[in-house]
Amino acid sequence: MTFAIFLLLMLLSVPIGITLILSSVFYIWHSDNTVLFASFSQQLFGSVENYGLMAIPLFILAGELMNAGGLTKRLINFARLFFGGLRGGLAYINLLANMLMAAILGSAVAQIAVMSQSIVPEMEKEGYDKSFATALTAISGLMGSIIPPSMMFVIYGVLAQISIGDMFTAGIIPGLLMGLGILVVIFLLGIRHQYPKGQWPTKSAIWPACTKALPALSIPVIIIGGILSGWTTPTESAAVASIVSLFVGLYVYKELRWVELPLLLERTALNTGMVLFLVAAAGVFGWTITFEQVPQMVATWVGQSTSDPFMFMLMVCGLLLLIGTVLDGIAALILVVPILLPIAVGEFGINPFQFGVVICLVLVLGLLTPPVGTGLFVASAMTGVPSGRLFKVLLPFLLVTGAVVVLLSYFPWLSMALL
Image (cartoon, rainbow, N blue to C red; front, side, top):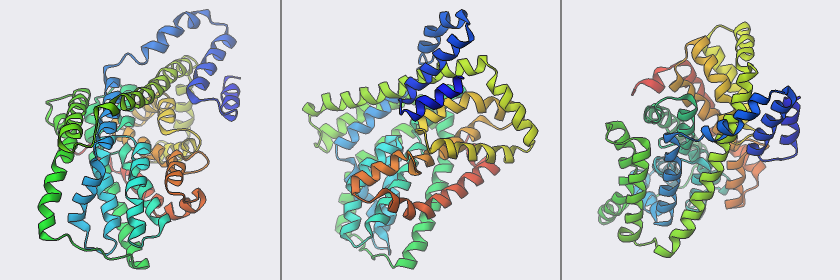
C-alpha cells in the first residue's frame, strides 16, 4: 500500500520531497506503530544535522558569485589558447571550459544553463550546427556532477557516512576519463562533418588571456588543492572559495556589483532549501524502509540473482538508468543509497567510493534522458533546439559515457587510485 501511494503521488506530479514524507506518514499510520510517530520529527531534522551539508550552500554561493562576476567568458578565452586553431576547435574549447566550470559550480543543471547561454551562440556564429553545439554543451555539463566539487558527492558522502574530501578525490580520474571520451567523439564527428577550422590566437593575445584567466582559475585550485592537501575540509574550502569569488567579482573583474548580492543570496537560499528539504524527506523515508527491512529483502533477491560484483554493478546501473529517467538525480540518490549501499558493501565487498562515483554518474545521465530529463529541457529552453532532436544528437555522447560507466564498474582502481 505504501508503494502504491508513492507511485500515485509521483503520477500526480507531487514534488518528490512531499511524496517521500507523505508516503512515510502513510506507512506509519497504516502500520499503527505509534512509536514511529513519536520519533518522526526527530528523524526529519536529524537527517540534516550534518556538518558536511554546510558545503552545499557555500558551493552554490561560490558558483553564483563567479557567474555574475564574468568567469565564463574568461575561461573560454583561456581555453582558446589550447584548441583555437584545430578543426572543430571551438567544440574542444566548449569541453575544456565546461571541465573548468565543473571545478567551480558543482551542479550539472546550473552549468548547462550557464554554458548554453554563453558558448552555443559563439559556436553557431562560427558555422557549427546549433543542435550539435547544444548537445555538446549539455553532455559536457554533466561533469559538474562528477568533477569535484560536486553537490551529489556531498550528499552521497553524508548518506554513506564517508569522507566527502575523499569522495571528491575519487571523482577526479572518472571526470577526466569522461572528458577524454567526449573529446574522442568530438574528434571523430569533426572528421566526418568537417567542422570549421579556427584560428590560433596571436602572440600578443596569449599573455592577456592568461593573466585575465588567473583569478578565475584560482577558484578550482583553492577548492581542490585545499581538500587534497588536507589544509581545508570541503566545507572550509567552499567558504574560502566564496570569499575569493566575491573579491574577484567586485575588485578584479569588476563585473559584480554590491546591489546584485541580495538576489544572488536569495537564489542561493532557495536552491539550498530545496536540496536540504529533499535530504530531510529522504532521511525519513529511508528510516521507514529500513524499519520494514526492505534493504534485506533486496539483498536476498540480488544475492539469488548473482554473486559477481561486476554483474551486480551492471544490474544497479540498469535500475538507476530507469529511475533517473523519472526522478531528479539528487532525489534518486537519496532514495536509493540507503537501500543499495549496504548490499554493495556488505554482500559484494564493493568499495563505497567506487560505488558512489558510478551511481552518481549513472543518475546524472537521467538529466539528459526523457521523460523528465531536466538538463535536456534546460538546454532546449536556453537555445531553442527541440528536445527530441537534441536527444538524437546526444546519442553518441551518451554511448561513450555509458562505456565509461562500464569501465568504472569493472576497474575499481579508476575511482580509488588517488585515495
